[in-house]
Length: 358
Image 1 (cartoon, rainbow, N blue to C red):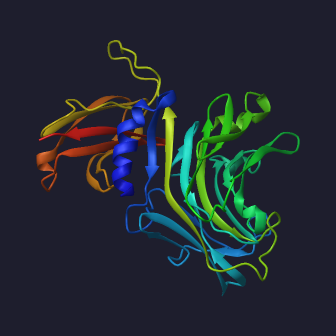
Image 2 (image 1 turned 45 degrees about the horizontal axis):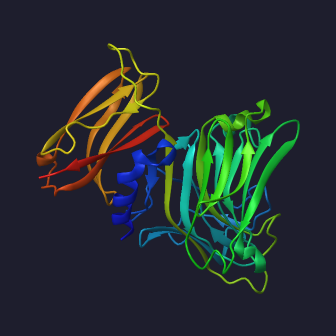
Image 3 (image 1 turned 90 degrees about the vertical axis):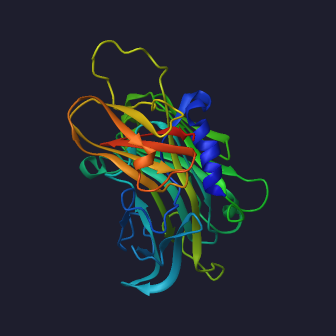
């Protein structure tokens, strides 16, 4: 049912979303395995700068797809000199973003020493290091007792010293492990705002020159740590295994009001245009624009996130292009309904709705 709701709610409302946000990238975890085009597993047991106790693996017992969810599972077991295993997944070099509404629907684990996180780091971390690259913690929970009902949102950056600012949000009843919740930020050139289930709880002004790290590309991280400087170690009350269920990750970005283009001037950015005609039967033209020589991929998917076809997958010089999608030549008869095309070019990613009406 999640995938049908995605089609009806997200694809139909993406371009009419309040504040003119459009869905530009999503991960619904609808395939049977983790999508390597989006995610890389970071592995190792070096403490990760926080004296954490787990060894991160790429094994399918620590991260896997189950019922349309990504499950990251922390286990108590001896592995490569550590007493715990878990997983840490990143989109670095594959999907990165500057600004937007970035959200995930997650059911969190619980217990002393358990530390799940949904967060972002600057894509330039390899060259400038941390915290100069900037860090945006969209959601962190340090488990145990009353902590199981509280999450944190924090930003880290570098001035003369490591600086940080954030806040926390406590649910009124139960704990975050009892049900799914939506954790999000709205990030633009002026501020970062943190939300739980649409409730804003902290805002950071990022217009100061010292916060330039938050005006550059960031990649997304999902991980489940065990122990460390902040949560402390597990104790006799901690139950294993612990699981973090991620229903989806979605990224929206503000779309400027449409303006009429003159002549053959090249755009100031990459752009995927709406297809025409729309609705279509059986064929439609999809336009796109490229600002500089780039490797462009254009694909068509159904509402379940299954790929129908690849229309473009090659290097393109700057210019305006059009490609035809013919539903009658897709290898199998396609039923009437909503489909969508996605364009990627470097770090740019965008999705547009198409309606096949027979």
